[in-house]
Image (cartoon, rainbow, N blue to C red; front, side, top):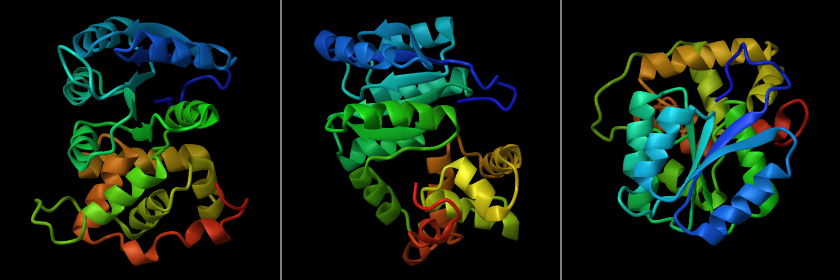
Length: 236
């Protein structure tokens, strides 16, 4: 994930974790055609992904779920525990509930299916770099419908009214720059607020923060999906 101090022209450093060589080659070729993205390494299994993430310190790991030696869920958990600043973007053929929720609990920042178009994968990498949490539409529906208020999880530190409003806009799918326009603040201020929210909630990503907001009843499912229509600049 991009830090507030990162230069505007910095390239996104990506590690690809995928056990099928043909798929891995295709992803590398796709990403290397982008002037703002650099593929710094490739891993053919989960253990190699953990090792290379520790060694190369990429900005993003593009992670498959089903891999030998160590699956993508466990690899994500280990990477996030040792290097919390590394974002994990899942690219998987699976949309099973068990995989989806396990990898978000492990700290993944986003989740795409391999049926996604090439441009969607590239846009998702850039979105994660900017601090957003891209989700395939079917995955987003699973996440939002799964977590309802009063699910029995421990209470979290309460958010301020402003922080709850910002989290609600995140849940609507707004990227940081749209949130900044909607709330009449700078992108840097939005990033700072999000950092405070993550710290309060003990969340590793935007998606995890939204899940906690749903659990705590700070976000209502029937209230989502309306802000983007009225936000300055139009839809995402």
